[in-house]
Image (tube, rainbow, N blue to C red; front, top):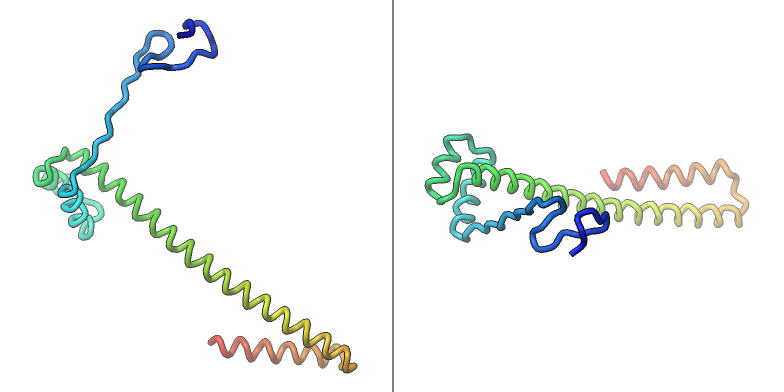
Length: 141
């Protein structure tokens, strides 16, 4: 192991520089039965008060603090899941809008080239494009 004064020393086997000891908490996994009971309560009450946490802790076999943090974590997970769903829906809608926009641009290009080949005036061409756009927007409504 490197000396305490070495700036590049690393932490190994629970030892830290200057004689401090690192203590790592063990992860606690809840049993499937506990999770099932907590989930059932969560469906009805997202924010249990102190009395609810106390009663639930006795029923499930966890401390009120564990109950509090479990609910806090579950609310965060639920929010993240909802945000992912919303993002997916928005991306899908964006994709559809881009495809529609591309189709409209291509249709306009075809109109312009057809009009130019037939010698139609720019004003008549703009009116035709506007009419087509109005028809498309009225079909969506």
